[in-house]
Image (cartoon, rainbow, N blue to C red):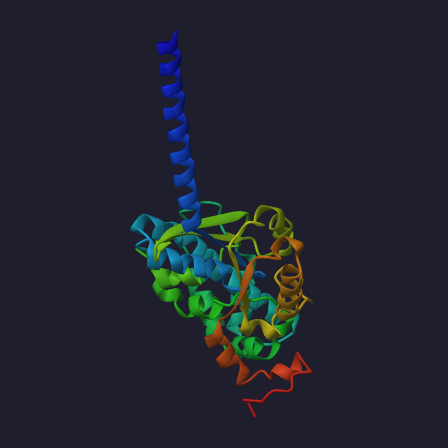
Length: 299
C-alpha cells in the first residue's frame, strides 16, 4: 500500500509541476503582450493605422486581398461623386459646363449593384470625370465643405478614376490606405515588435458603435486616440450639423475621464497633417473656433 501511495503522490507532484510550468509560461507571455486600443470618431484615421501596421509588420496585402478592396474603391468613387452632385444641387449652384447638369443627374440616379464583381461603366466614368473637372465642383469643395459630408479620400480617388476604371484594375496598397470602409464591430491585428507581442484593436468610430467600447477593453495597456486635424471645418456623416472636431473633443473628454481607463496610458495622435497644412492656407481656423488665439498662418 505504501508503494501505491508513493506512486500516486509522484504522479500528483508531476502534474502539479506541469501546471506550475504552464502558469509560469502564461504569465511570461502575458508580460510580453501589449494591447493597444485605437479610438477616435469616424474617419479619424484609426483604420488607416491598422492597415499600415499590416503592411509594415505582416508583409502587406496579397494579390487576392488587394482584389477584395476593388469593389470598396468603386463604392468610394460613386459615393463621393454623388455627394458632390447632391451638394451642387442643394446649394443651387450652376455647373460651368451645361452638360454636367445631366451628368450629375445620371450620377445621382446610379445604384451600386449588389454584385461584388461589378465594374464602373465607361458612361458613368465619363460623367464623373466631366463633373469632377468642372470649376463649380472645386468651388463647392473649397467654399462649402463645412456644409456637407465628403470623405477625405474623395479627391484622391476622383483624380485616379481613369486608372481605377481599367478592366484589369487591382488596387495598390496606397489605394487600400485611402479606401473608406466603415468600421463595424472590432478588428484586431497581431504582430511582434521589439520582443513584445502587440495586439492592436480598431473599433467602430460612429456614434452607434461607441457603446461597445468600454466594457470590452478595460484591461488594455494603452489607448491611441486619433484626431484628424483637417476635420475642423467638416461635419459628421451621421449628423450633418455636428462639427467633427467638436465631436472628437467631446469623445476624448469622455475617454480620459472614464473610470474604466483610470490606469491606462492614453496617447493623442494628431492625424492627416498634410490635409491640414493645405486647408489652413485657405480656411481660417478661427472661423470655426473663434477663441483660437494662435498665429494666423494664412494671413
